[in-house]
Length: 198
Image (cartoon, rainbow, N blue to C red; front, side, top):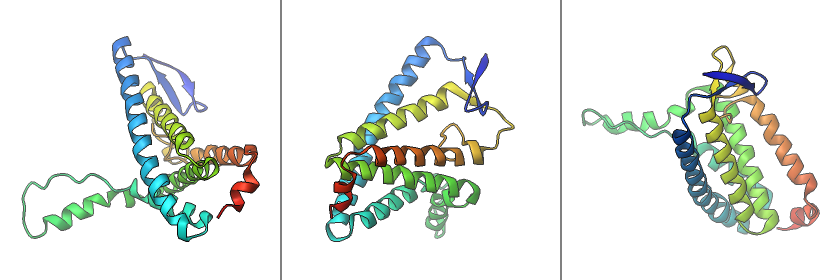
């Protein structure tokens, strides 16, 4: 059974989950959110951004680390070759770059992930620790996974604008993320101090 609407009728609420399945899915989303947020924030914000800003202006370090973070999300897991020969490595390598071939999906998703990286990196730079960025990242992952599980896309909706169940691959998400960054920037009482820190 499906009913209700979300995102201005871009997706419908899916009521097909049983109580046990819903709890299991939400617990799985929670665990995934915590583990991924800790790992990615430690790697991209703590290690990469932290290292880059030692020898570069923090704004450049923020952009570079966020761009790397965004690009790495497009590398796919290659399928195991059915036969091994001299060209197997090239075929596997080409399949890893499959996420870069669909320009219509690459463009909004890349910009959205870039903005996500900038938001999380700015949060780390502003606070001086990873707690806030880990919590924000985990909250986003949990919400996105839950949204994808609990809703169903209306077939005639343009994914390029509205996004899929992941949301992050549509242009509407760009507006939302820019609003989040603007709110974080304006509401930060120490914005001037944060911007002045090398």
